Length: 116
Image (cartoon, rainbow, N blue to C red):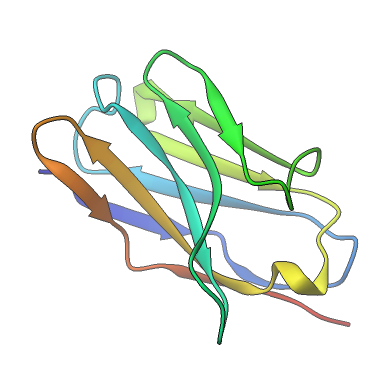
């Protein structure tokens, strides 16, 4: 099992930046994949970015070139750097961890609001 706690959300103007953090309760070096989904009102949950234990990462089409996922194994933390934010990026951002032979685990979510 693993518990995940997100932080770093908030209100930002269009064009601004935020960095989200996802702190895990155990070592993340052997977790198969970790990343972020987002959920906006009235919309389906959308994959934002994920990183596999080998270091390969992938991004949703709507955030490519603007968002960057990274991790610090020493701190058991995954980050999402979000630049050039747009109003359509407004959503609750949820951290997830996919643990082989165990399943998916989710954080409680952090609200990101992009508005002038």
